[in-house]
Image (cartoon, rainbow, N blue to C red):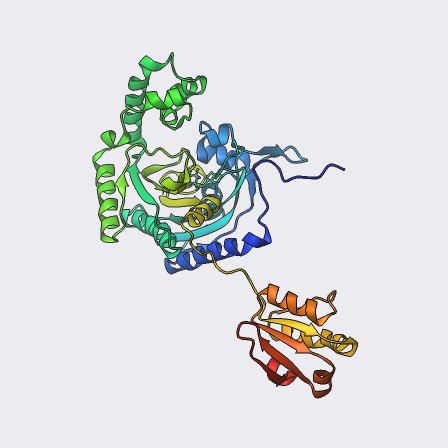
Length: 414
Ligand code: AMP
C-alpha cells in the first residue's frame, strides 16, 4: 500500500528535535515575561473576513496564500496566516483594554500560508510574536523591538541585523501613494499583471512584488521616508533615539515594506544574511488603525512576529545549543524473575515521587540492560537482583564514574 506523507510544505517535529522547540518556546516565554507580556492563545482558524479586512485584500497573503474553506453550514473561515489579526480580534471581543494602560500580549503557534515551499519557507510554520496595544508612544516601539533583540541575544545569536523604517500614517501615506503612482506610470506596460492591478488599488504593494523585472523597476522608486509628515518624522526620530538609549544597533532601511496592509509608522525587520533567500527572521511594526478596523475603538498598537524554523536554522548555523536532549536520571536493571516482578511497583513509586526512570521490560539479560543503560544517557543505573530484593536495597551505579554503592529503597525515594 502507498505510504502516507505529510502535506507538502509541512513537517513533523520529531523527538530528536522537539526538545529544541520546547527550549526556544520556553526561553521566549521567559524573556516576554521579563517585559511583562502575557500569553494569549487564539484559535488557528477565524472567519476569513477578519484577515481580508485587516491584513488587506490586496496583500499576497490574503489574495494568494490564505487557506480559505467553508464549513458544513457554508460559513467562510481561513486558517490563520498570521497572529496579529486574531489577537486584536480577541482584544476587542474580550475588552482586554478595559482597564486602560497598555495591554501587552504574546503568542506562539502555527500559521498557514499557501506559499511555494523552499528552505526556510513552509505552508505551516510556527511564529512567536508580541502585541502591545494602547499606546502610540515611540518608547513602546523601541520596547517591542528590544524584546525580540534580547530574546535573540539570550539564545546567543550573533549573525543578525535590525533594520527600521517608518511607513507613515494614512495621511502621509496618501501623498506617498500618489508619488508612487507618478513614478510607476511610465512603466505600466512593463509591470506584471498583478502589479498593474496593484497600481490602481494599492501602489505600495508593487514594492513587495517578487517578479525580478518589477523589483528592478521598484529599485529607484521614491521611499515613504521622503513623504513623512512632521508628526511621523518626529515619532520615527524618537524611536531611533530610544533604540540608541537601549544600545540596540540598527540601520535605517527606507525600502522596508511589510507584506501586510495594516502597518503605520514604525516598520522593522530582523535579518540574518547567512540564511540565503529567506533571510527575514522576524518583523513587525505599528498598526494604529487596526483595532478600529476590527471593530474596536480607535486604539494604537505595535507588535512583531518571527518564525521559529528560521530561528532554528540560524542557531544551527552558529552551532548554538538549543537545550538538552532529555535523559533519564535512572535506568532500572532487574536481574532474575523475582526481582523483575517486584520492580514494577518500585519503578512506579520512584516515578510518582518525581524521578525520571527508564526501564525496558523486553530486555532480560544483564548485558543487554547494561548496554541500554549506557545508551540511554542516564546518570545512574539502578541494579536490582535477588539479593537486593531480599535486603530491600538497590545498587546505584554512577554511569559516568563507574562508582557504585548500595542504598536502601527508602533512601532512594527520599
Ligand atoms: P510576516 O508575518 O510575513 O511578517 O513574517 C514574520 C516572520 O515569520 C518572518 O520574518 C519569518 O521568520 C516567518 N515566516 C513568514 N512566512 C514564513 C513561511 N512561509 N515559512 C517559514 N517562516 C515564515
